[in-house]
Amino acid sequence: MATNAAVAAVPPRTGRGWVRPVLSGLVSLALVIGIFWFFIPQFTSLSAVWSAIRSMTWLEMATLALLATWNLVTYWLVMVTVTPGLSYRQAAVATETSTAISNTIPGGGAIGLALTYSMLGSWGFSRSRTSVSLVVAGLWNNFAKLGMPVLALSLLALQGKPSGGRIVAAGLGVTALIVAIVLLGMLLSSEAAATRLGLAAAAAVNRVRRVLHRTPVQGWEKATVKFRQRTALLVRARWLWITLTTLISHLSLYLVLLLALRHIGVSEREVSWIEVLAVFAFARLLTAIPITPGGLGIVEVALITGLAAAGGPRAQVAAAVLLFRVLTYVAPIPFGLATYLFYKRNRSWRRAPGQAPRTELVPESA
View 1 (cartoon, rainbow, N blue to C red):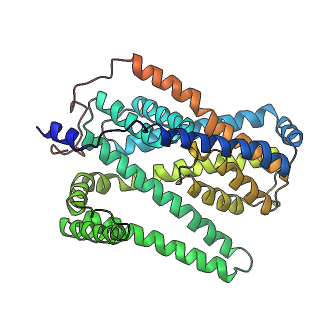
View 2 (view 1 turned 45 degrees about the vertical axis):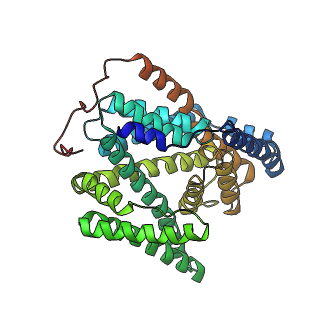
View 3 (view 1 turned 90 degrees about the vertical axis):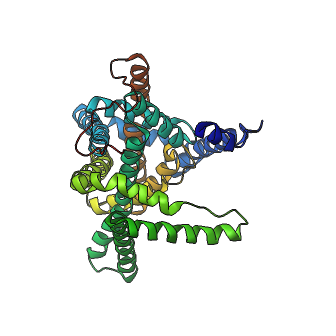
């Protein structure tokens, strides 16, 4: 009965359901073509970029490849930490497949999320267990994305004579991060606090929806209470490991960029590691806006222009950024395709719903 009612509540899809994804794909394609065919040639010559890449030794290429491989492994660490009962091999298949989809398809993040639900469900994880793991991982990932610009601005403010603008920006960033952490602490502290936060969030959203003449949202207080119940145990037991694995993952990605710059020939004197961190951190924030798959094109422009403005030679900066994106954006795509084919063929991990291994961190109600 409930299933039929839920299906009936979903509005029927119209024949124009293809318009939005097609338009999104065309916009993404236009942006990518404009950036790689017009921006980079105007910024520097492609021959100079290729010469900078070819100047690297085999040892430098090998160390970069090893660090990029380690960066992929860090995603598995996060997934295993937030999903009790999940093996590292399963985490590798789930994360690499969803990453490949996110990097190739407009709106691929949502498709990758749905596929992750499907994968974990076929391995016996309930939807509630999967939801808890993905929500917690997403929260910590956003904390890291907010925290890295704050850290970078703070370090830049302490370099030399800190300007008033840098100090104000760093202070505002630290305040925003502290407020976010405090709100999460309140959310997990008690059901009453979770209810108040849910009601306050719904009231704020409904004020905006009234202006837009939309129907008000309902039930947010129940959703926040349910989230609190299902995640409090996991967060209290593993918050330190979740934080450490998330930071390791973000810092590993940053180190791939930093090492690419140094191997290409951009010295510490030309662009310091703190300046690289600042440009990297703010470029990562742009990926929160799903304009192109994985921020393709947009991230490259942000990194190249930011690092060049910091003092890096144009050709070497462009070469390092393109090499960084090949290793961290392009290379995972064929790997993700391989893991997806493995998932489709492998039946040994399949379990009935709710039969995934349970631990002391998985309540029976989950």
